[in-house]
Length: 256
Image (tube, rainbow, N blue to C red):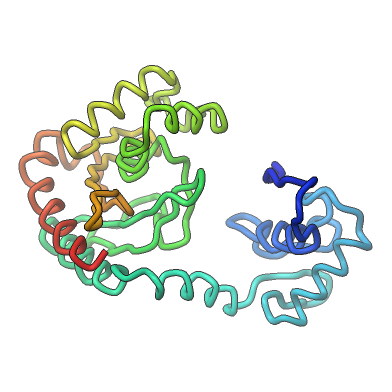
């Protein structure tokens, strides 16, 4: 696991940093882990890792059965506390559900948190997708329509800094990894007010997204519709989905 950057010369709580590292290793594909597995993933010795694990058990965020640790439902309170303090979130969910019903496809809302795209709302359409984009899911920013929209609203220097920190990685044969090409695409997204991403996150997945703008003109989130490329074309996304998406985003905006 790559270690997040922290200024170790400043007044930071190293123990808290390490404890959160331990908590974060319990992700998709790592639901139940032993002490040794956690220690290997976070790069700490077993004795130190054990203290953090037991502390998290005492706090109720982890449970232990035999020699394996796993998350408890209490971790969901951390995410809910964040979402419940977003002035627009309560309205976002019913709007996403309404958009999903109108187009008979899945609708998601995501935010940019530092260098991560995090989904905060999701309405599943009648046709299930192979990829899971439920709330809390993190995907590479540049490969998702929602991510492209949010990146397009950054300053040019911020965009370049982002890709210096996060060199594009190909997830499919269609993923664009040339930074200059992506930057050109972001400029177009900003000008036209929407993004279409064709099979860059997953083969067969086609998505369109628009920004959710607050009353200061800042994109605080983005809303997108995902579908299968064999069911829909780019033209259908623009002609049929885009007006519905824009209307939904505008109805969330007054609360932002």
